[in-house]
Length: 288
Image 1 (spheres, rainbow, N blue to C red):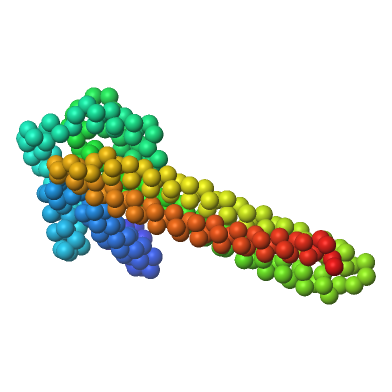
Image 2 (image 1 turned 45 degrees about the vertical axis):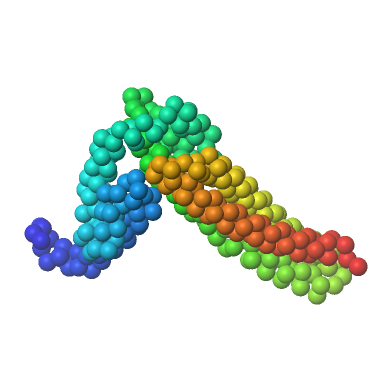
C-alpha cells in the first residue's frame, strides 16, 4: 500500500479499513448464498432446469462458486433455458391470449406490489410472447417471494416499534397509578389525572398496534384467497409450466394463511393490552 502517509495510512487501514473490508466480504458471502437460495426456490427444475441445477450446484459449492453464480452463472443459465424454451414449439404455444389477458389483470389488480411490477414489466412496450412466457416461468413466483419477504419485513419493523414503546408506557402508567393511590388530600385528584392520562396514552398506542395488525391480517386474507384462485385456475393442467405454477401458488397460499394466523394473534394480544389499559383509565377516572 503506497500512500503519501506511508506507515500511518497502513496502520489506519489495519485498525479500521481492514475490519470494514472483512465485514463487507461477509455480507457479500451471505448475500450470494441468499440469492442462490431464492433462485433455487423460484426457478423450477421442470421449466428452468439449467438455472435450477446451477443454483443447486452453487449452494453445495464454495463461496467462490456462489460468487460466480451471482455474477455470471445465473444470467448464463437463464439465457440457455430461455433459448431452449423458445426452440420448443409446444411451449411456444402454451401462452394463449387468455393467459396474456390474465397478466394484464395481474398488472392492474394483483394484491402484491412486486407481482404487479413484474407483470407490468412483462407487458412493457416492445415486449413479446417470450416475455409473457418468462413471466409465467419465473418472474411471477420470484416477485411473489419478494412480496412475502417485504410483508414480513414491514410487519416485523412495525411490531418491534410497538414492542419497544408500549411496555414502557404500561410501566409508566402503573407507576403513576401507584403514586396516585399513595397520594392524599388535594394532591390525590391531580395524581389520579396524571395516571389516567398515562393509561390513556398506553391504550391509544395499543389500539394503534391492534389496528395495524388487523390491517396486515386483511392483506394476508386477500393474498391467501388470491393464491387459492390461482390454484383453482391451473389445477388439472399437465404442462410443466402450469404444474409448477400450481405447486408454487399452493405454497404461497399456505404461507399467507400462516401469516394471517400470526397477525390475528398479534391483533388479539394488543386488544387485550388495550382492554387492560382502559381498565386503568377507569380506575383513575372513577375512584370508588
